[in-house]
Image (cartoon, rainbow, N blue to C red):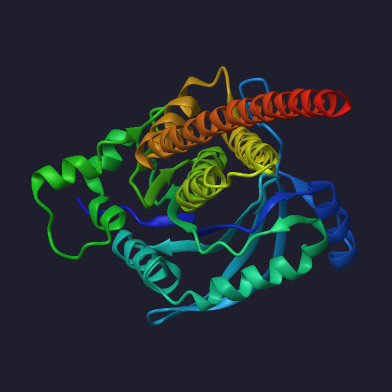
Length: 371
């Protein structure tokens, strides 16, 4: 039986960047209103009740002018959007509409888009878009960063095939492996099973399949909630990776500062201990605040289906693993802060005892002189 054609859908390439310590979203809305002459929008899940799943702080969605792309032999037009998160992340997206094409053509187009704008493609397009966003939103960025850390993700979405399909029929009649793997050569049975393991359906006629760097979504009702959830999971991964690397760089520097401070045997030692302790406390407070914002970017309460997809995406992207590494490093810095604070107090107490002894000695000497 011939594979059904893709009647309508799209292919989306995401690239996420950490551009600031935090972003003032109200300021972003003001800047965009001046720049575009139209109001921006706050993102919300389209088909899910707010009490079931909602953004912690809804990001601001901006739409830019479409751009041309050359994907192999095809010249297409890509819609360009940016989603701005308050914890300092911007998610850029290029979306190419797909209409009336065979399944092999759809798969080939997705792989061509990955080759052109994916992780192994030309990054200059993303660099140009990011520079444009940075310049436009400069006033809204709190402590801009120049981090080289980024995340990318590719999503193939189909809203309608040439005939109605159930999830079971879709699995039987379409080979999802070349689309999800990007491989042209046949994969082993074990590799195929691993690739298709993260599969989800709520209704009989929808399907979501997740992998580390790609996803396929069949959603006849046109909802975008699953894609939005995957973007949030990628944003959380990016933020955790950023702070994991930040703390990796900070720990050796902290050890050096502690050793230098401990070698300081003079009257300023207590003050230096206290200053270093305050610096470490500030670092812990800032990282904790931002990681909690990232953790609470999406609040899942009642929608079991989206909750399963969200939890699976977080696990697949290793967000809990990276988050645990950040927590361990924060614990080391907290322990060091506590030790330095105690040492500063001990040094002050020792200094006070020394000064008291000096004063006693001076009193004795003065008494002897008077005698």
